[in-house]
Length: 169
View 1: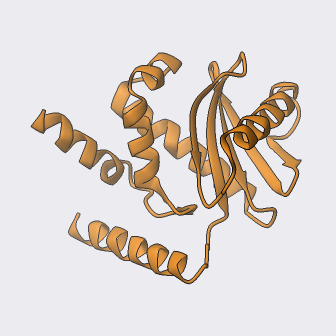
View 2: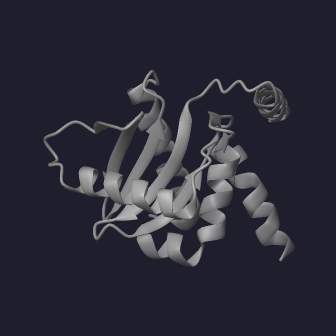
């Protein structure tokens, strides 16, 4: 357990140091959770300096594009200067905007890890869990991704701070 925590701390220091130098080794630009009706349930942006109106417009364009696709089509869409990797779980779409040279399969695995982590905490996560516990969903995502770089992949390490907060309250 101690070794995993040390690696996690070192990864975070490397990411923070890289961010100070203007380097971003992982190209995650944003993460969106959207329901079937196109309503955004969670949005997190990394290194994107967009106004609120620009974000709404971007989200609307991406959501319309992804919701219009069939299950037989692949889960990768190019939009503007982003590659959108998405996956549907029940009534929720998990969309991740990445750089064009990013590995799509790695991002699909990241999405699956995020869902499995929320499943472990909430017990078969659904849209209502995210709506009523938005801060926990954001916290999990923040434990996993820092400055657009994946820094943690252990479900136990991701959930440990949340469990400590729940014990304290």
